[in-house]
Image (tube, rainbow, N blue to C red; front, side, top):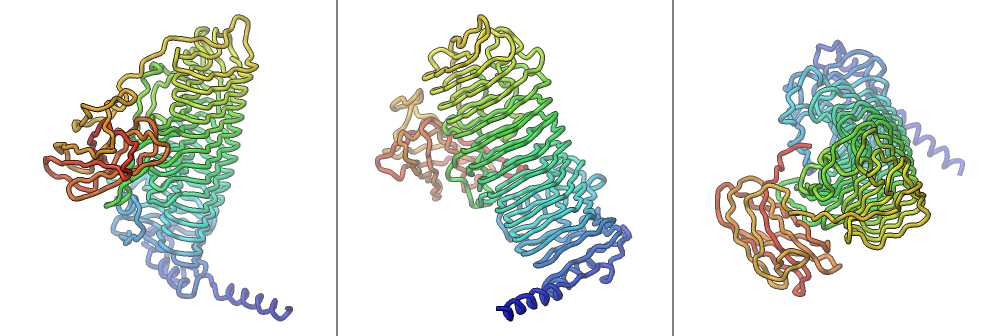
Length: 632
């Protein structure tokens, strides 16, 4: 046994000895801020790689570089007083042949200061600085891919980024794409330039920990993406400070093909986010969003505290691919969050056809310092196809929390303080089912304003709720639209009614809030929930005169009367595509067409079900243009 232990120790010592240090000065790097040191530093990296790994040491000085390619078992160590300076000349950057299929490939960036693909055991460490030179150079916002990323690591494993300062990237600062086992600790990341200068992008990655770091950015500070069909999952973000962000503080989306799962954000401070949300949780490209925990977060001076959104942009992430189903959004927990100086209401908004499920908000306190005008309760637009952001829903009819199309909503120990002259209720619930409101308290600044307004909702339980200001009514419901309302131990003021009913507002022309001239509606058939419908037990043929070019979506207004998901097929021009309808109310099934059109021409679409006893109904078919060249 003793002999075996000596052998193991000897093996470890031998391997550590074989990993040497490679000072870039010995390879010809000048560090004078003028000489292009790319070749010298790359030579040190290549030598370390040939030696089966090692530390590439950057001593104090300013090293102008174009593109550096990291390789297996390399630690790039930037000493205190050392700066890697991004060259202002495009010619100094290498065009890399990227292998991994992602929406960001080529479209978002062609140039990188530091790049690796398929590398293992790589590190960027030290108290030094990487400076992207983005404040004075690369100022043209579009096209985005002409501005260099600072760091892009693709399909890498066992990555450490520790203690470095990442300043003024010309494009995204730190992009992790399809990486695994990543530890980011103690970094400082700052950008001030305009246009798509994200901080940290965690994209289709697994097992990532971000801790003890500080972010100040002109776009999103920390954003999780899924620009391929891989799920971004098992992500931990903790003990971070985010301030002066021109985008969101922490976000999932907007690119969300693979989706998001098992994400924890805890013990973070967010300050001065004037346009977007502190927390934005969004999936709009078909991907799942599940098991998200936000805990112990403080916010100060944010536009919107949180925004949770399910949309159906369903944008493909590569050529020849399209989104064939809409996954669930469920199991989201917001605990121990305190917000001061908020401006706009938080919201949780699902699809008309597919609700967000199981959202819990507990120990949440928010204080507002701004007032908005309000639109009527029945005029809040769907905007299901749009680019998602909290600001897309303006003038919501609630000052603190607005919920639409949500199932299983749990609010416990929620306290909301309105700004002076606020005329809206604290909470509005529309198309919400199975909700529990326990110890919910809010100020109401107008005596005739209810604390909570309910419409189109079912099975609502409210207990130990009370208003913090004097008003006439605790709960207000639209007549004949709210069922199974249960009250228990709510605390009423003198002369305050627990509930008041008002006339129901009609919901006007839904499903018509996107632009297109190519529309087909079923004219004959059985009426199902207000729409004339074709039963897909028989195939449906539709001829449309295509008069648009570019990327098109065929949007089918569909309903599935069965609880079982059903696959439908769309055949046209020798191509067959499929889509899963897994909802029981009318809603759009958008199918991005694989066929391109460059001139006006008629097209016949045949729609059929995989099940001869189909429960799917079709009411409308619209064709809309889809901007797949837009970068987020």
